[in-house]
Image (cartoon, rainbow over all chains, first blue to last red; front, side, top):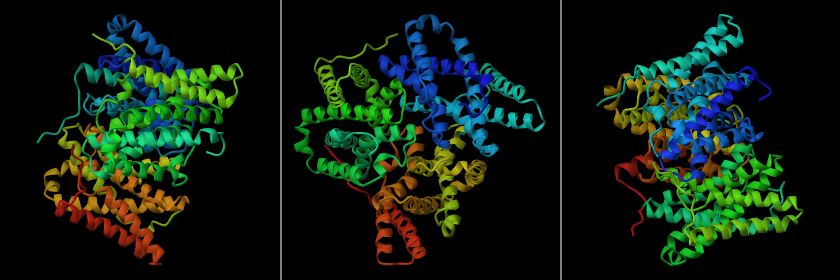
Length: 206
Length: 206
Length: 206
């Protein structure tokens, strides 16, 4: 973590981890898994994207294994969600907002990590998208459904567009922190707009 | 393998590999896969946990690629199980015992490997649990079912409790070999008790 | 890529990538995924095998992340297939031929990479088989079906037989390039014969 600058966004990354852990917990509880299964799914949702990213670039041990912080955040988030589920379910909109915020942040973190490893811009954007989306993909695969990312309103597309925006902004010399926050905000808002107005890419019919 | 002490448990690890290979073979035959598919599933079940463990900590090439021993054990076990299936099926209880023994051993091996890599105790326990459980998780995912580990009687929970026991034992200065065998025995017995008395964690209902 | 000789087969490897990208695109369109989902599936099919291979041997960042070539090939192939689908669908036999050619080539590339890493022959054949088959396995798992490789006419078996042939040929001092082309041709022809005459390994019945 120390060799690329995420200090300004670390707080929001933690929020993203929390949001994804909550989303995973709900998914698993709806499938009536036992509490351990719920914890596994919460964990996979929250750390899956970063794990795939670290494996692909060879930055091992993967991030969540280096200290207990991530594990403890997911553990307490999932336990809290299980105990207070009725209360939290009413916060559905809040959850969606956190999920979208997490998507934006994780995408940004992935792009920065790719850049720190000297990868090509196109690859960095792919890495950001992977960081944002793969937690959900692994979760859905384990739960035996076609990953929602393949069906849902603009989701991964938002990550890609956000990544393109980031390179555009730094190309025109926008300050680094501003560019990062703008990308997070862009992905966040695009997701909200897409869901609110049911925007989606066209599907194929035969 | 040579940089952490598993010499005392290597024989039992081989037994664990055999047990998981047999369990994978039966699973695949019940799904009427062709013999190659059966071999793949037997292989995945027996080496999946260790592979995920080695990938996460970056110990590559992963263990089974370093020599032919593991591959040959799985190959001959799976072929033997396919040819003598009627006979082996009557050994269902023996299989279950081997599976539980393998679970205990693989969990212990994973914990020791994590310690050899200087990881945090909590992470080592997670790594042990991954080593014990992920073979079955990958097998079930490939076979298109929700992994049994998410539904079954106390399974991964046994690995976690066994891991906690190990740190407790070395904390109170129990001799290393004794502590390891105690953990393997604990997980082994806990699985048997859980299945015999149908112990499980409560599920969620809505 | 530069530390093992694939210069003679690089052109055909690109063709294999194209063929797998096309096959993935068709699979995803038949499942009515949105265009982004189609791109993901095309990408996973074309690079999945090589990615798993590179992860297992620890050759990271994995091959497709080192430059944009592979990504661009997959992108343009998938977009082209989406736009000209009616035309390409009539080329079904051509696709099958490319898929089989890709299988042969990717298997050969995987074997050579394993040899360059000093791995045991049996492991190299496994690595070649993984390189050839895992793109399809990951694709089918994401699309929530039992991977076709577990059900279909001789598929991975062709990779293994091709790998054995390669070691036989270099054992009797056949020139390297000739041996490689012979293996690719062998796998290619075996697949065609297997599909034409519906050859398959026997399944298990109870």
